Length: 94
Image 1 (cartoon, rainbow, N blue to C red):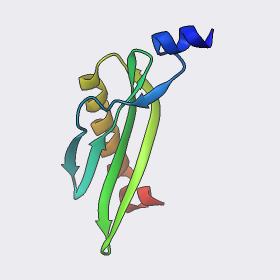
Image 2: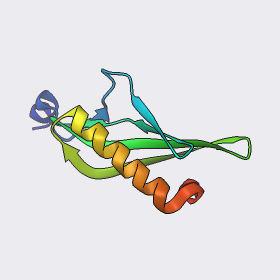
Image 3: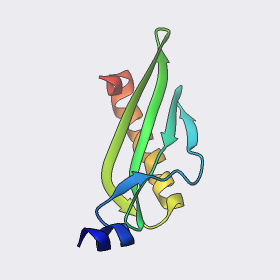
Image 4: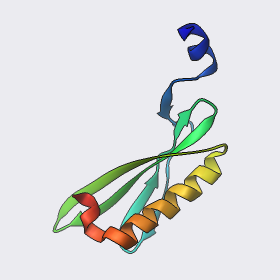
């Protein structure tokens, strides 16, 4: 059974490394889209980065949302990243 899972990509998740990650700026933060491939879908995964008091900070977020295309997934990653920044600001870094 595990042979069939690996053959069709089920049960695995991996970073979608075939294309360089996209990024965008939002209120002084950088949001980097790093979608993961799960089966035949793309899972929402991203990184929020910012320099705080001279120190580089980053927060990785992974959500359960899965979308059929990389473009749709990247759009949702940026929306969720912006939402987290708007709601939490620097508290996103813990």
